[in-house]
Amino acid sequence: MTRSQLSSVRNDLLRPAQYELALSLLHTLLQDEAAAYAEVVAAEGTDDEKALAKRAFRTAAWELLDTMAGDPTHKLFSDEPYAKAVRLFNQIQKTVRQQDHTWFTADLHLDHANIIGYERRPFKDVQDMYRKLLYNWNSLVAPEDTIYVVGDLSLRGPQDNLGPIKRFLAKANGVKHLILGNHDRLRPQTYINLGFTSVHTALELHLPWGPTIYVAHDPACSRVKRDSLWLCGHVHSLFKVQDNVVNVGIDVWGYNPVSLGAVFAHWRNYHADK
Image (cartoon, rainbow, N blue to C red; front, side):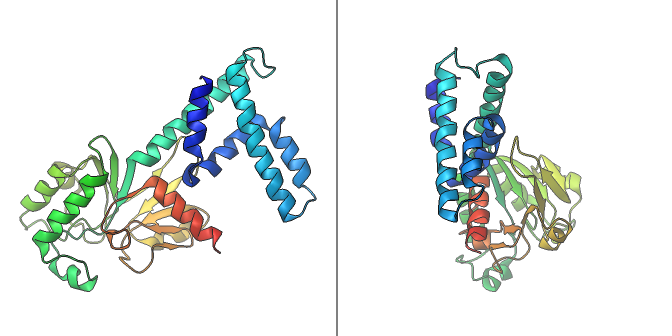
């Protein structure tokens, strides 16, 4: 990994959604170098001193990695530490890309005319809602991206005409996965036939590094693991972020899918304001 590549990753990680998570990995790699300095200074210090120590660690950590990349004679340039640095930064790069290309949405209720009034959605009728939700989806989600629909795609049952749902999914970009909601009444194989790659009642997402994310339609499931991040739908406009839950439903995200990076940012900002 060259100096310029490290610099590029560093600039990417300066975005709030990635930077703090990257530091935990750098701490593991550099604990005998920059992190030790930060810990010693911060141990008995005031809050201001701890903040200064943390910034010092950040600066020293990046400088050390830059030096490693540019100087093959550096003392850390043995096979294992350097190989570890490369692996870590490859993981970071992969997760940065994943955050930009992984999307979530919920509660589309595609054929539900009454939801327009219930949630005061800005659509004239069901057909207008179809068109605009599809436009919003494809404006953000690329064909090669991954998108998770966290329940309540539509209210159509086994006896209903599924043509409109199939056409919507055929036109919607991305590799699509469905987490079943209370209104998703078709058999899992039917949803596969309609265009989903997989169908789940709930899901665990494991990133290359960072927190495990739990995905379920009903936020009541989050009570099982209160110290973990959960993504849900079901509650429509009731809340956007609450405790350990982020609502990815369209009614709180401007009728758009939300990226994984935005999920992390809103979750962290919510807790920062507590």
